Structures are given as structure tokens and as C-alpha cells.
Picture 1 (tube, rainbow, N blue to C red):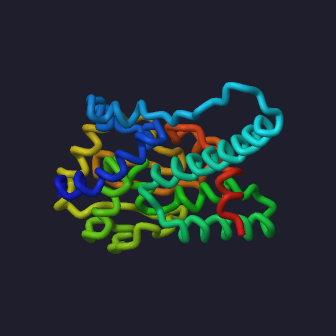
Picture 2: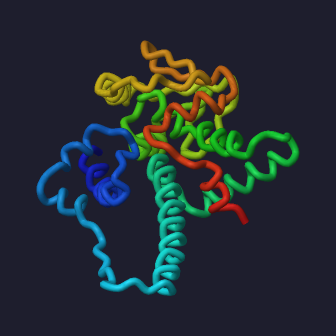
Length: 234
């Protein structure tokens, strides 16, 4: 299981290096600080500068730079959130954004809060946030192998939406594996306040709705949610 995950994760490492951010806040990315990887980190684009000043070309160059910087900003902002949640499909993210925008019109609630709620109430997110898995891919593997229960029923959908009062438990055959994930984790930041975790019996209880201010502290990077929503908005 470990070898398969390692092979599948390899393409993501290159994505993180181009963004120059440890998106998943994992220590294992520190192992890639070798000469062959430092070459990728230090690559920069070199522009040929003109020896004379041309007002027209100067204005056009700055105009072009403005849009290229804006495109790069929006692209990297989108990639940070996408990679953090284990590479979700573009169509799925667009669907969540549209759901949040529609619900905000009827409830007068900020669309950013509703969008974060859609992501944080996923089953795989709850498992990852409580350190029962060391990555989103690992959480999805437990779910696909029928090792995760919600209210004593096997759930095989990664995007299963949790509700207040739901209890998440695990098959006894993976207790040792889950326990090793917990022991090897940093336990920081602490699990979200809307989840009550019992590490003795390896259970998770959803006790309240998600708070927007609490969720922002659980991202190991800064993200512009407004820009992200506008990027996927119809």
C-alpha cells in the first residue's frame, strides 16, 4: 500500500516545487532538498532587456506584465487549494462554487463560508484533519477499501457529506495502521472544533457546524478564496 502511494505522489512533488510552497505541510517534502531538485527550484526566466528606452514598448511591456502576473496569481492560488485537497477535479470544484453562490442568495450567507463548508464536510477531509490518515490520498484509500463507517454503515464515497451527529469509525483490521498515522503526526494544528475526536476508540463525532474563522487557521498557506470563487464562477 505504501509503495503504491509513493509512486502516485511523485507527480505532485514537481507541482509543489513550481509553487515553492509546502502545500500539505508535510515533513517528507524536506527529503527532496538535494542537488537534482535544487536545480528545479532555482530555475528562473531570463528576459533580454533593451539598451535604449522606448516609451511605447515600455508601456506595452508593463501592460503585458500586469496580466501575466494576474494570471500567475490566480493560477497559483487555484493550485494551492486544489493540491491541498488531493487534486480535486475542476468540474467538481466548479460545482461546489455554483452551489455556494446559489445558497448564499437564499440564506444571505457569505459564499466563501459556504464553499469552505462544502470542502470541510467531506468524509476524506474529516479523516485527514483528525490525523487518522497522513494524506488525502491515504484517506481515500481507506474509504475505497471499505474500512470507514459512518453511523455503522460502510461508506465508499470520498465526498460523502457529513452532518451534525454523524459518527465516523474504522474497521478493526486497520486500527494499527490508523494508530501509527496518529503517532507519527504533529497533531498541529489541532483538529477542527466542529469535530470531537476519541483517539482511544478511534472515532470521530461531528458536534457542530463549521466556523469560518476557525477553518482559516488550518491551512498551511495563505489563499484568496474570493479570487478562487471568481475563477470558477460561471
